[in-house]
Amino acid sequence: METTATGSPLRAGGREWLGLAVLALPTLLTSLDTSVLFLALPHISADLDPSGTQQLWIVDIYALMIAGFLVTMGTLGDRIGRRLLLLIGASLFAVASVLAAYSSSAEMLIATRALLGIAGATLMPSTLGLIRNMFQDPAQRAVAIAAWMSTFMLGIAIGPLAGGALLDSFWWGSVFLLGVPVMLVLLLTGPLLLPEFRSDEAGRVDLGSVLLSLLTMMPIFYGIKELAADGPGFLPLGALVVGAVFGVLFVMRQNRLTSPLLDLSFFRNSTFSSALTVMLIGSAVMGGITLSISQFLQLVEGMSPMRAGLWLLPAAVSVIVSGMASVGLAQKLGAGNVICGGLLFTVIGGLMLSQVDDSSGVGYVITCFSLVYFGIGPMSALTTDIVVGSAPAEKAGSAASTSETSTQLGVALGVACLGSVGSVVYSNEVEGAVPSDVLGDAAATANDSLAGAVTVAPQLPGDAGAALLESARSAFVSGMGAVGVTIGVLVAAMVVLTAVKLRKGPSGGGDQPAGPAADGGEAPDAMAKAKPVPSSESI
Image 1 (cartoon, rainbow, N blue to C red):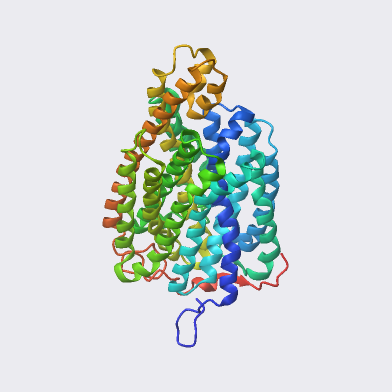
Image 2: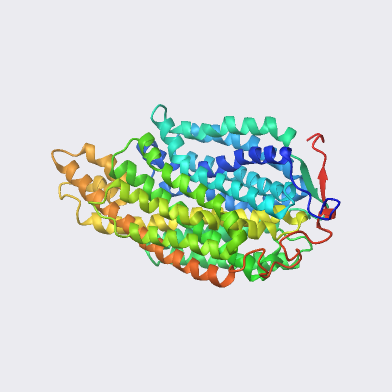
């Protein structure tokens, strides 16, 4: 580790902080692209006519592919250079954005969203790995990671607002074109402001491990989604078994390899593993509740996309404020205590949401939403620092990819599982409430989702359309209440886990992953193995 004459870690200067602002661009965009689709979904439904399952895949596949390829890209970045991988990913993301914007079918949109996810997977470990290398001072690194994570959360929160502004004036494909100018800025400024880092210790990318990782996560994800939507059945249970089998094979292969795709030694530490678990559940809560609230504002309250996006801003502000404030509080109270305190707000928000009914106003719903987001802010900032700060510099990309895999997979699982919880309640309630003169395909569409009911209602004669909408909206609100109950229970379990495993935090003397120094810094020879490349190097 580079140090000053007094032996303290070298502190970052103005160039590093400007570089952090550059790294915020792909971070903002990749998270924004996860949530920007929430408000566009009704418009896509009207144009491309996807089924309910296709709607979920349109939303889910992006985060799933990011999660599937993050570990691969983290290792690849350590090998070829994190800045180089970042710029390659930016180019791919811009191209994929254009393809998604002009998709002509639900199948094409799912495919292009998958391509966007693969491109996004090259960005995330590179940004966080570079932050780990650029900010060697633990205090500065904590602030930088909190700012980076706040940017990620901001993207999830303001995605609907940005999408709403575009949807008020343009077609649904315009939400994807947001990525093009952002990536152009990154491509122009990255070579000037970002240093290059690569590790001589990084091994080759094992294609067998890449395949096994995908064969593990995709069946498990599919099985959970179908199990939540339709209950126990041969197909979802079989998918879970298949995923588990490939997961065992993946672990066995990593243990045999000299240079594994994923360093499993990190998971032997309870603090590291617990932090990842908390990140997974917290991200799932964010993904699920953002989808529910976005649809509530537009489909139940009948707001325009722009107005709905504005109503989501309080939550965006709350998560940034709590995330940034948590860094200073953690120095005084301990990271685990601050995370626990924040999560209690999320429990309260979820339980308040469980009491929502047809008479609840928009203000009440947004208050619940903002409380959930406020409580997740400290968790997001501090657990990321625990995970990334504990890794030696030559494994920064691998640690970053593990952290982001947990976050991105959590968002995808949250949309699938919490979305399915709401869908099950909706379908059960609306099935007996659909007017008798709504028959055939129209009834099936209305039973499938609220978006389907909104599409069908104008086509019905007389008062049948109004009656259908009233029943469907009431059923959706009931489903949203079930989502609130689920959030309250999940986060209450997170509070217990955090209190037991993360009480001392990364600098409080708690156990650390094998290898790094106890204070969360590098092992003595860590920086010697990770070679910074002069920023003037041709890439």
